[in-house]
Image (cartoon, rainbow, N blue to C red):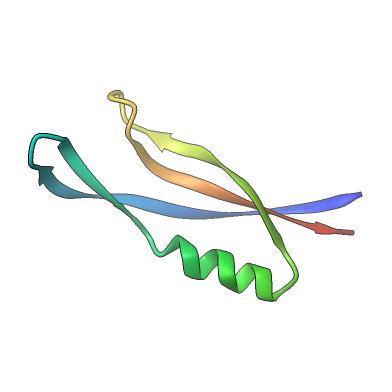
Length: 68
């Protein structure tokens, strides 16, 4: 049996990319994953928690699991 926890990170609008539309920056997700891994959690994926009508993700929940 596994136990799951979720951590929300934001994707912020940073401006326009040349020829590529909007540019978004994701919060420092790497440090979140590294910190959880050091505590024995395993990263298993993400779920878009808040999404614009254009399909751009504004917030996502990172999913972590640990054996109970």
